[in-house]
Every structure is written in C-alpha cells, then in structure tokens.
Image (cartoon, rainbow, N blue to C red; front, side, top):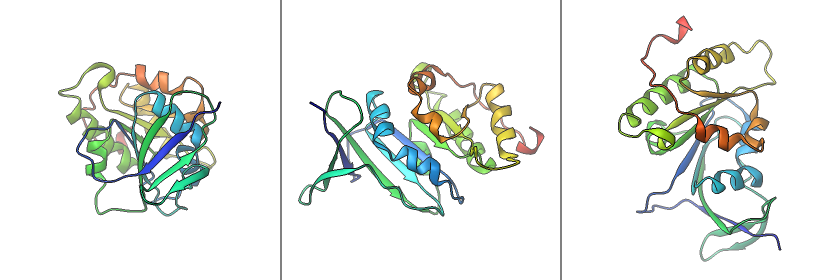
Length: 203
C-alpha cells in the first residue's frame, strides 16, 4: 500500500525540528518553488530527517503544497500521497512572500536552499559560518544555491560557481537537480569551509 505523507501548517512548537529554509529573495523563481513544494521533494527531505519546511517565495506564485487527498479542518492537517513507499512522515511547513528580515529563518534552518542572488548568498554564508563554529561534520549548516537555468547570461551563477569551487557552498544547476536520486546524500556528505568574507564583486 502507498503510504501517506502528512503535512502540517506550521505552528509555534517547543520541540526542535530539523529545518529546510528556501529563499528566492525579491525575485520570481517559480520553478524552484514548484520543486520544493512537490511531494517528491518533501519525501526526500523527510527521509533525511527534516521535519520542517519554510518557503519564502518572493514575487512569484505561492507554492501549491502537494496534492491534497484529505483535510482535517479541526487539526489543520492536510494529507497527501507521496511518490514512493516508506514510513508515514510528518512535515510542518510555512510559506510567505516577504518578511522584514530573513535572518531569523536562515539562523533557524539546518539547510538553506537559495537562489543565486549575491545578497542571499552572502547572508547565508555568514550565518552558516557562525553556526558552524560550534557544529561540525554532517550536522553543520549548509547553503545550497540553485541556479536559474532558464535565464540567459546569468551572471549570478558565476558568483555561486566560484564560491562552490572554493568549498563554501553547494551549487545545483537548476531546480530539477533537487529531485536527483542521490542529491540529499551528496548534500549530506558536503562539509563546507568557513567563508572568510570579502566583496562578492571580486569573485
């Protein structure tokens, strides 16, 4: 029998939950939002221990979080059917267009998935560096930058690729790479170097 993946709208919770934070800044990057709100992606992150997903979707369309097959109005629980069999999994989620600051969500995340904007990259690297002073190995905070592969002459990708080559972050060439069979295993094994700062224009 196919199992059911249960997705809860995020409420204030005292218990720590391993978190993915997705940000597109002030841009529109619907293809990324569509991927990270898909059942297949939710299943992937859940299988790697993540229990919370926060999506900042910018000027694009709000995420259509999964295919609903049942909803409990009293508990606020939406039930969907995953693409693969496995254990029953709970994912708590929040989605918003903008906040005055993304720093708290970046700080609270264990994994940051970002567009290739210079501001978002630099902020993410700074926050990863601070967190990783006290956390090492596979438990360290990581920044994954997803390049918008449909943009022509995408100069932002040059910054991401330069920082990737120096071991500071992990780049993926397009949102669909988040659905690769081994992507979460590769991200899990990636141990970033501490970013020592500098002007992004020098990369």
